[in-house]
Length: 239
Ligand SMILES: *[C@@H]1O[C@H](CO)[C@@H](O)[C@H](O)[C@H]1NC(C)=O
Ligand SMILES: *[C@@H]1O[C@H](CO)[C@@H](O)[C@H](O)[C@H]1NC(C)=O
Ligand SMILES: *[C@@H]1O[C@H](CO)[C@@H](O)[C@H](O)[C@H]1NC(C)=O
Ligand SMILES: *[C@@H]1O[C@H](CO)[C@@H](O)[C@H](O)[C@H]1NC(C)=O
Image (cartoon, rainbow, N blue to C red):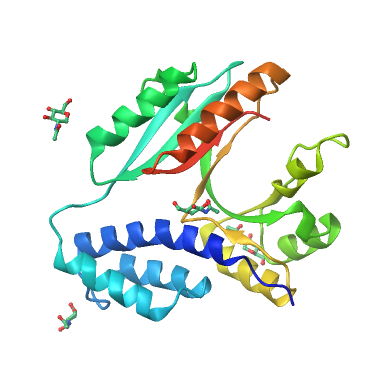
């Protein structure tokens, strides 16, 4: 059976997880009986085999210094070629993160959008990401639909795309929250490597096709946004 994912991804995930965990502890306290949101996070961590010591250390640290709290923010951005972009941020310094997002958007030629002006083009769902190189499409479809998934979205890669683009392309298995863990178990059982979401993902309701120039500019804009410390995720409706 293959390794589920590399160590670096685990730590990247644990970074995001630590933030959510700290936030839950600060909101609801460290008591697992009364703080059900914390229990949900711990279950997620267990699925990812995050070591228990790390979790305990994080709970302890968060309950000791409860003064600064992480806030989740969403920024909406117009990209190139009529594309919409949504940036998810989790930060203990809102002013710092909004300034950083604005600066990157300006530097890379995007435009900040008013709250609500692009969000309606997306919907929230649970998503499991599977590298196209890690699974056979038909096999994946069978497994996912059998375990209660809504849909399997194929990445838009063409035959002549570079191999390195293929390495970074994922199938997205879309599901309701209630069927999510059944899908993860089934994939695990079948030995298919996957990356879970961090609670949910935004999926575009319809996708927009753009020319190569706009695609390159959007790619630069989005990867620069992702490079920001406080940015957890960047979503787009670009095809
Ligand atoms: C979950 O969050 C972490 C840190 O914010 C990020 O590095 C990782 O890519 C996210 N995972 C997914 C599947 O979005
Ligand atoms: C945790 O919460 C439960 C229910 O609210 C309570 O009965 C219990 O005493 C609490 N435990 C601690 C260690 O505070
Ligand atoms: C953050 O920004 C708000 C509004 O722009 C301002 O009133 C506040 O003083 C700023 N806080 C800090 C710590 O800079
Ligand atoms: C969950 O999966 C079952 C089949 O395993 C399916 O009948 C049901 O519709 C799914 N629920 C949702 C909300 O998609």
